[in-house]
Image (cartoon, rainbow, N blue to C red; front, side, top):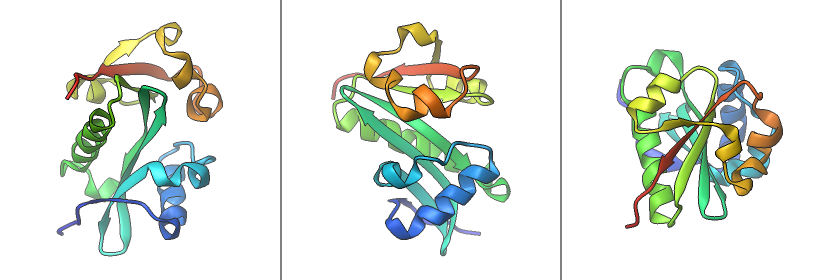
Length: 148
């Protein structure tokens, strides 16, 4: 089953994004205000994968990388993650941070390293995702970006 390319989500995609996040137990509370920072992959009109990149000063927060069960093992998460990392790099961000409860090993394979929350820049710690939506038990990870 072929799927489309990565596209920026629009207002009309918000309900599908929120549903996809909730099904996979990811925070969806601030999707409306962060919608313009989310990208997705569609199979016709069905959102099958999504991820967000929330800017915070010279940094970015990779958030809510998710793929529908039946579309897993096709490289969609990797494609989205690499796209979002390149996006952050093209915007001149110094590093990309993320929080995860279940995918530390996956993100390590992509080049992220674990980091104590105390080492996270204030701009990232002040995001809603970091400060209140994700539990304190989530692992924090970082990827330092090289200059273009």
